[in-house]
Image (cartoon, rainbow, N blue to C red; front, side, top):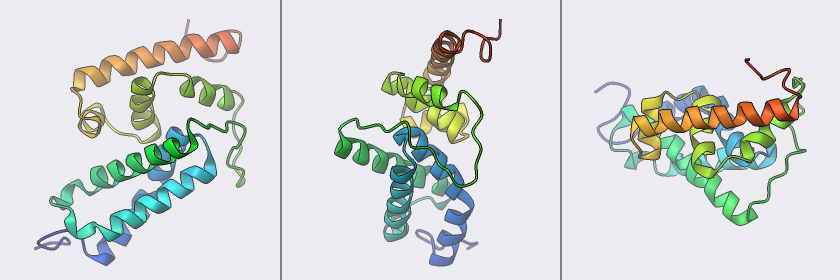
Length: 171
């Protein structure tokens, strides 16, 4: 039977999997919401909802994808509640140092269209592959690759304009 029961995930396994995945969840939520407090709220709510509905998971091998989908839905809910309220000056301050340009990068990502931003957040904040990103968004892999290239090109242009072309311009 393995670590998963016949249906869903048991409590102990759920806690272990969430503990392993929590930093990725935070990065994803922060990428979507742009605010540390809202990102923590989204992660907390997604973990809670996942726990409550853990027995409904049909294929436990897809736990990470399932929980990510819950987290994304929670981020959308918070965005709808805030009606596009994005606080860019709120950065996590728990002993982390942020390199120069981090704020401009976050602003540039927020300036992307929603379709491009979703792909960038999942690929680079969440660490998902093209195939995983395509599955999460329900779009073809080719579309993910195209959107990634387009978004990176737009970010490169935006950041080279903001920074005088020094730090981000690959030449």
